[in-house]
Length: 366
Image 1: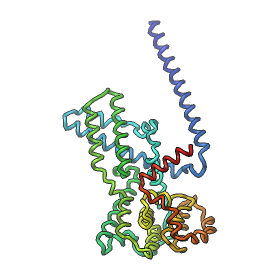
Image 2 (image 1 turned 135 degrees about the vertical axis):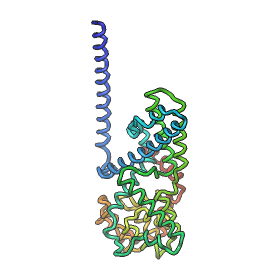
Image 3 (image 1 turned 120 degrees about the horizontal axis):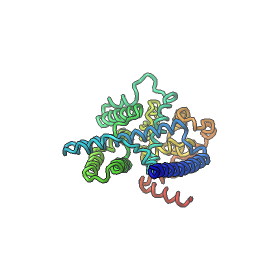
Image 4 (image 1 turned 90 degrees about the vertical axis):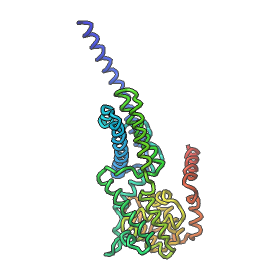
């Protein structure tokens, strides 16, 4: 009896010591995180609203993928009469996002760039419309959806559907699937699949049948993913269909902002400059505005249009300094369109080449 008691006490002591060591490790990690957070430059820090939006977006995307993979893998096993294995997949949902974060995978630069840009763009779009108003007319997209040009009407209708779908997912926190770019979606699906498998094997060991079901579910998800249905892609098709002449571009840009259609604004400007969507979006979201003013001059826009765009964006984004812009407007208008296009020429390079150039530049700065 004494031996049992001693054994139990030793086990409890061992557990307490292990817990104490783990607590010390967590305290050290918290301190490291707090120090890193303290020294983040103010202009690089996410405010609470944006941080919350990115968190909701990430949780929604991961959750949507996890749910779909679990359901289809379970269905595959049910069809083979493996009911117990199917139940294992449907039950015991793990904290997939937490596990991916702990593994460092969610620090992926391209993934976070996309999510932060999406969230910031959504918040900015919500703040638009007070200045660039379209009066009592129907919104730009509604009018374009009734356009006599069938290509324009089809693209406008598709953008209305895509924007509604995404907005519904944002509001409920449950996106109807992932609408990430294909490469990022592919990456995230396999990360989630690996995490689901890890939780199963931790409980019951390796299981080839479950592995095959998870793989089949992941492949099915990837096969169904349609990158061309993303609002960004649809907006690009609409901008291509409209192909506005120089005199048509300014009113379209102003109306797009008035309708809170920031995605269409970006696509139209990108079309005019022959610069891809991601690059133009980054320019539009920058609070300083230096590259945006160059882009607007490169598109040969007039003083009134540039001022209207600046005012609309300043009211939608409190980081922007409208007074500084007003002081610089004369200098901005003095930039010849040809010089502005020359300054932005690196952005016309292929997207993947730009990413590689940026990666080399970051390494050189270390």
